[in-house]
View 1 (cartoon, rainbow, N blue to C red):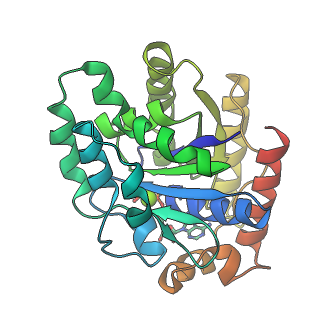
View 2: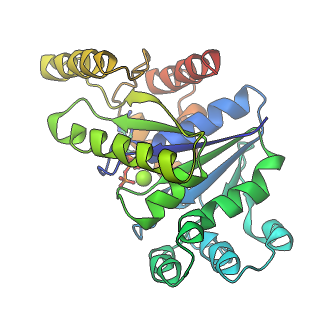
View 3: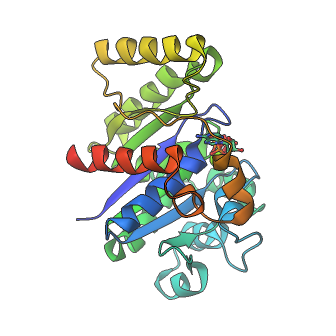
Amino acid sequence: MSKVLAIANQKGGVAKTTTAISMGAGLVERGFRVLLMDVDDSGNPSLSKGLGIPEPQRSLTDLMLFRILKRDITGELQDTIVRHAEGMDVLPADHTLPGITDALNGVQDEGRKRSILREITDTVKGNYDYVLLDAAPALNLMSINVLTAADEVIITTQPQGASEAGILELIQAAMQVRANMNPDLIVRGLLITMLDARTNYNKDKAVKLTDGYTEMGMKVFATRIPRAVSAEECVEERISILKYDPKGKVATAYRQFVEEYLHQS
Ligand SMILES: Nc1ncnc2c1ncn2[C@@H]1O[C@H](COP(=O)(O)OP(=O)(O)OP(=O)(O)O)[C@@H](O)[C@H]1O
Ligand SMILES: [Mg+2]
């Protein structure tokens, strides 16, 4: 059975994209069929760029416009989805995606306005075990589309005060979408990223985050992703950290995270 998984947090720079790519690569290593979808409408499609697809000929914008016009997209998928050398498929975005909000706002039916992205994931997901959505640092109409399309949400956060702001707001947004549009939506858990184990501040924050959210009944993944410069370097090589530094601590942590995730599925 295929699963649509959103990696989200409206805070910027908390390793959403890195997690989507690394988790995707980790799931491919485990033999799963994976599609990474760049749904970042902030104008910075870093998943597509980070995987070497800078300005695709066809992108998510085209598919969303087709669906807004109620056109069948089945025949378009082959020209839009790209196979990455590491074995995952990628549905890229480009700089035109921010404009989709205007087009979505033009949709009269309130329900469809929020579920155009879901119409696309519903069309593609049969071909995959996991469809990972790399969300933008925003809480807007596109984010509502992301939450409506998703079966599960993973929230990434850095163990720093500023990164936590917004986690509750995102959980509330997910609860609202669950109540109104997507009754099966699950907030799967919180993943602590970019942990600098050398600083007590960072370590204390990670413990407080874990205790605080666990107490609220929220799953906090036991695996924490450490900070390492290799995670920045791999972006320039257009490959995942699992391929760039396979035995390094970040790749090891992401593999462990994938195992933890799979064991709880
Ligand atoms: N474990 C890590 N160690 C060091 N640097 C990291 C790590 N994970 C991510 N980074 C770097 O931090 C920056 C932000 O990461 P990323 O782009 O994944 O975050 P994001 O949440 O997707 O950002 P945005 O909100 O802008 O989409 C990038 O330069 C990335 O290479
Ligand atoms: Mg990103």
